[in-house]
Image 1 (cartoon, helix red, strand yellow):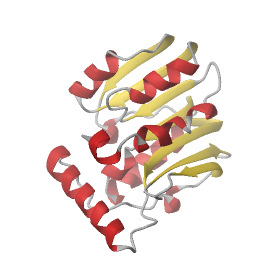
Image 2 (spheres, helix red, strand yellow; image 1 turned 30 degrees about the horizontal axis):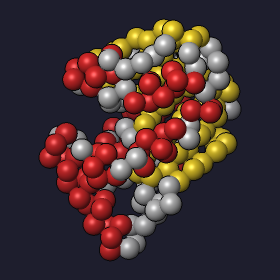
Image 3 (tube, rainbow, N blue to C red; image 1 turned 180 degrees about the vertical axis):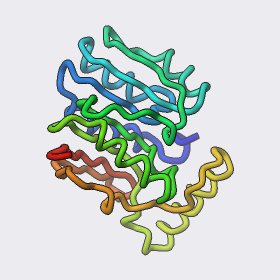
Image 4 (cartoon, rainbow, N blue to C red; image 1 turned 90 degrees about the vertical axis):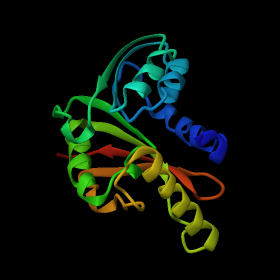
Length: 195
C-alpha cells in the first residue's frame, strides 16, 4: 500500500542511512515492518552484524524472516515498544524507519529516552520518517491528514499528527540529514555524545 502512495521514496530515504552502518555493529531496528531495511543492510554488510528486529506485529515479523540477511546474526522480537526492556549502552546503531510517526507525544516521552539509553556513547540513531515542511500548503496539509486518517483506520495508531522530536534530543548531535525533493520524508543521523 505504501509503495502505491509514495512510490520508492520511503525506501530511497532509508537507503541514505545505510552508509552510516559500521562493520561489526550491534543494531536495533524498531518497527522493521516487512524487513526491507534488514534486506538492504545485508546487501552491503554480508556478515558480522548482530541485528535485533523489534515489531509488535507477528505478520510483519513473519515477512521480515523471509528476507535476506546474509551471514548476519538476526534476532526477531515480538513486543510493544512501550514494554521493551531497554539495555543501557548496548547498541551501536538504532534504526527508526517510518516508526515514530505512529506515536503521540505521551508515548514518545517513553520511547525516545529508551532509544537514547540503549545507544553506546558514539552510537548512532538513524531515523527516517515523514516531515511537515510543506504543511503550510494546502496539498501538504491534505497529504498529512489523509496519511494519519489511513494509519488510524488501518493500523489503529493513536497519533493524529507528527510530533517534533527536537525536545527529546538530549545528549546527541546531528551529524547528517537528507530529505526527498518534495520535503515529505527525511533521514536524520544523530550521534550520542553523552548519557
